[in-house]
Image 1 (cartoon, rainbow, N blue to C red):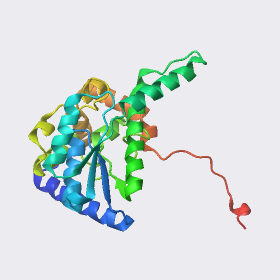
Image 2: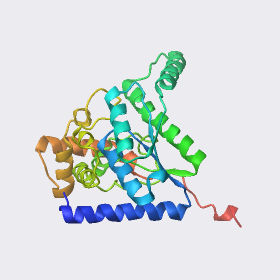
Image 3: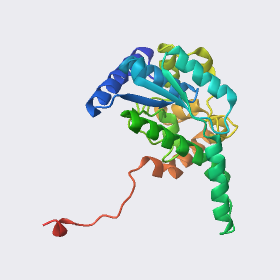
Length: 255
């Protein structure tokens, strides 16, 4: 982890970058998916410092979710005095799952569990963009470096956003930045989870965030964890790479 002096300097640089980026695009503000977790809370705090509380809109999107997460999301919004919207996606998701399973029945198939889990963050991102475009805002990302390295993101879901100020900070660094910006202690100390699968992030991945961070920073960690991280990194490369497209020389068509 970066030493505190360097880390907090980079956090302030990231806050300045938020302000400059929003101004450059001509947007009026940012929309943040407020999960009640440390990442979104830290991004909310950074956004408020960069843009002012009146230009930050937080949106909580329960989807068969844990009640405590909604309470924590409200706590974060109240702490930073930003506007809070709740858009309950439970009914929307349930109806979509039913329709998809009905269609898949014709193929003798059912939605697999991983597909069900990934539909939810995609619905959430659709919601955020629907709101952001209506207000002239940008959607700001809340994913950290550790999640990106192992692919603990949903393509076109939480990995879809206009820009992201914490993408190069590890989980431990995000926590420190959150403390620095006065994110509520309850949120900082809560075990990271996506609120969708009933398990913590680390239980789902099979490794700890500290092991991922150690591997990123030193090139080594617990041997078993290294194997898991390497495997997750390999199978998730498509989430980090540019989308492949077929290319050919079009100049002869453009003369």
